[in-house]
Length: 188
Image 1 (cartoon, rainbow, N blue to C red):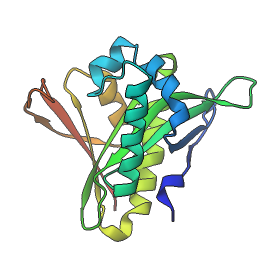
Image 2 (image 1 turned 30 degrees about the vertical axis):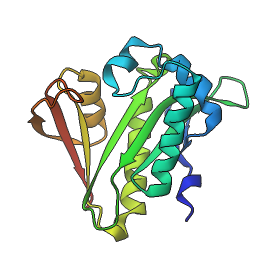
Image 3 (image 1 turned 45 degrees about the horizontal axis):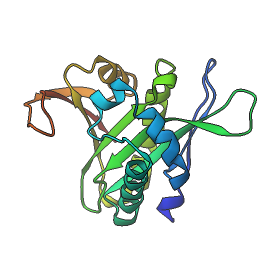
Image 4 (image 1 turned 135 degrees about the vertical axis):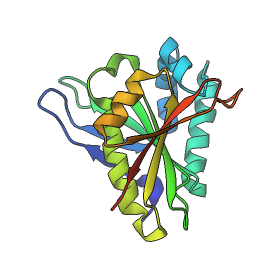
């Protein structure tokens, strides 16, 4: 399987359309610059994107992650009302799913215009199932979700996607300035 061309679908709900998850492409850069103007994005993510060059560099890093196997990052897209194209509504990633590794980390964010509509839980559910299936033969049995303790929205996403709270992690500045929560989902 050529993993850089992997595309996933998160099921539609009675109130929301299906989501498409696909690897990031350079054409997404312009949308990233817009999305990163949001104060919440800047607060909850470890990346800052200020301009087109920064967005293109970030996308290139995501694509390199696919090539090395270190990270599999997906742009999360949703159909526009009454239109044939899709709009960027989020990001979801699996980090460290390497041969012989029993665990990997997941992460995500949702664009401001898409929050509160179940985008993060549906995208995380789709990528979690994909990761357990795609990497079952390599020994993957556990996915870890980490977030700052004051990020209540991420706790709700974890609960909705069966990531059980495991522990509170001590802050590790400067990358992790506040304590964090560790949530775990295991594959049986």
